[in-house]
Image (tube, rainbow, N blue to C red; front, top):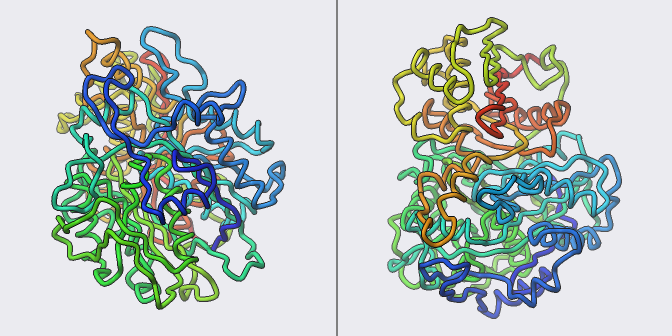
Length: 582
């Protein structure tokens, strides 16, 4: 169990948690219509900061994104009274695209476009001495960042974690969602019969977690967390809510149902997401628990959503209120879930809630958040490391490994005979060693590299596909995120005459699609996570791997470093970790 000791929200509704919570209580929404904004040809509705708000938020020498992250984190740090310079304190950032608005067609890639570099700049400005981590898992990034912090604290690698979820909107992100036909021009209506799509939003939210229980009687804790994959489709959720259901099951939501005041759902107001969530909740036998969504107030704030909605939900839990779902009128999903447009009073003062969220790449995540002193029996999913796990200093035994660079492939120490170099090398390996998965040719370069490396790993492993690996995790790390796909997409939206945003290119600007493709190919429903570091750091990678392997359901993991800055310089060093003998 890890405890919340400070928080903050900065959104168009206000610059503190209290201002945001009161705005939601009053039924205020930050959603507004925009016409020709960023020279986009289609109108849209979104929650955006005004020019005056940005002027007040900006920090000299920082980008919009970095300023927003730093402002929110600083307020939460001040409230929590923590020592950010301690080697036992870490900054964890959840974001989808960070400084992507700094990437311009035909121009060199600025270093701060890489999310790890942006996190490093913010961490040093705030006074951190430890290396920051970035969880880049599409829309579940914020909850994934909280889950990572929870694990690292419970595994005793740190005492305090400052978790920030943030994203800003721009021509890149809005045009991408428009290309997917997912954006509503009207205010969104989560779970409603007449819902037409999502609205985007921008915000930063911070939650500070610590291992030690605070003295406050109303302290709230993260009791359990889980990340699971649908293994269904990279941009459409499983119709039976498989990943979401598994995440709910992993945090023992059904067993805790009598303690739950509400379930805060993702509730994007898209046709398939809302339907999927309702099915997952019904499968988990949580129909009697009130469900709400906050997108009608904030829009979909992407990497900020998981943290922002958790912080608002903590406030509602403390005040014994079930917040209404703004925009909802009549249930338009098949799962028989309990919804209300109005705020309701929790007269029973139930001490816990569930936060659930889903995203591209098949990712799903869930948190069980509660108010002590009534923790679940066995109160957390993870246990401190016990040592003796493998002889390589990591969290388990490395059984097989693959190295791919632009001109060489090595499998378990043996060089594979190849003739091509660069991007053509991956195609050569596919044709010679795989050949039965034509979707390979639709993937971006990073996903192709991950796919090929994994195929070679599994071939070396010799295990029959789909046998005894249903819960295998896939956890990858890099430095440059999805920069090759980012450059391709920027080229597709350059200017007016060259404006042809491609949905198939846009979805691969999320680096976690590489782990989603692996899960789909192999029917893996375990954790799929993608982390970005300022620089490659093997010690930090092993710490995250060990924390991930402490999830009891994870018996093995495909993991390692994978980076694809361009066709002439790329590297994949992946391996299989099997849970070691204690």
